[in-house]
Length: 252
Image 1: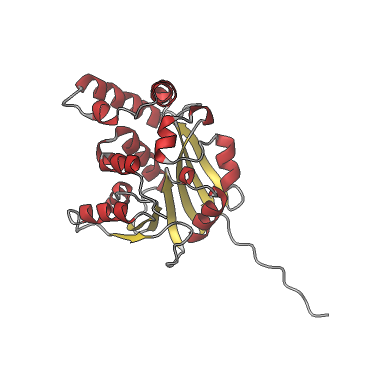
Image 2: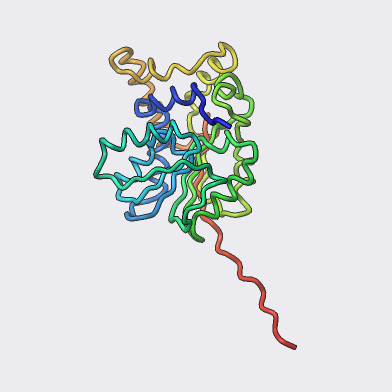
């Protein structure tokens, strides 16, 4: 079954200019911390934008995605970054059969695309070594579910409680925050009322709309520095729980 989605492909093609996505990435990068040389798996890597950023900080990165055309896009862009330690592979989270024991597993805007997110997250958690880091970003606010979600093939949007419940069996949650408070009206207007794609290109292009781009950058920077009580995305940092040893039976 094809996993190609034209709306998602268009979104990936402008990801490098997407201020909202790039600001989310910066938060997740900071969550991992300054230590270099970690083995990082980016699950649902798309065009590889986040992979480059982890690799630029000195990590060894593998990006996987079930859609071959997305991985082809990432590989084409990899030719312009030969100095970065990034590899890419066509694989879903559920079907990935390579070596695990990653220091960090990252999944941004992926779990909402998977019908059985419980099975997918459990597989993600087991790909990171005990004590390793799991970084997640998902769309927030079930009440915002609309045109945007339908076009991208989302099954759901999350609340803080539902995301915490999803990860709590395998991981200990260290940080959980909303992001995108300032964009709530925009999200509601375009996805629920107008039923149109978000104006990412126009809002982020300084040459077309310098004042709008400046205002968006300032709002997102504030949202990055000051966690808010609501938003259009949820960002999570968790640590995989240590494996529990099986009880030892003593001979009678």
